[in-house]
Image 1 (cartoon, rainbow, N blue to C red):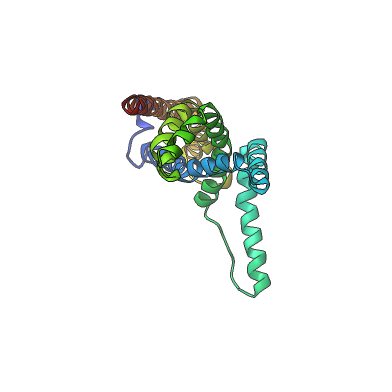
Image 2 (tube, rainbow, N blue to C red; image 1 turned 90 degrees about the vertical axis):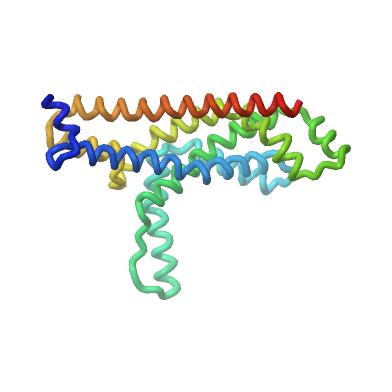
Length: 237
């Protein structure tokens, strides 16, 4: 009962603080998806284009953000963006101090990392599709956008789901790094609880259970998506 009281939602418990931290962790991860997924797709498409400039940009983007440690990427974007924008403001004569919000900086950093890794997944999915589908759609007079969104994209998603699910789980775990820039996420709240209560084993176990819960729920969602797109593909064959 003593340990359970530490998780109460009263003023003496840490239930509300940990819940808020968990929501920040989940919100940050979800906020990266609408940026990282289409950006990764766009990078993969550029990697397959005939433009040398597009291929070079895609290769550079993928190499940089897959090669750098996530913590270093986060720190560079958080501090680097502030310094860069501040210098530009000073140069053009604007007064004031520019401060980037920690949540925004983390979202930019992790979205870029997620896009770099997901681009490789999308690229691998592209390579498994037969080129004859594009040619058949062209012969039938189907436009390129319709061919992509109605024929190609559902197959890509079905093939890419296992790889994207792994990237999502990595993203979910990487968000714990935002405590280094003082964003009050689950790990930050857990560390505060440990420092005050001197109960590291209990609170770190609670944090583990929360991350495992997020992972289990994510797995169920990705399994549902995979089943859904498998049925969709069978229906159009």
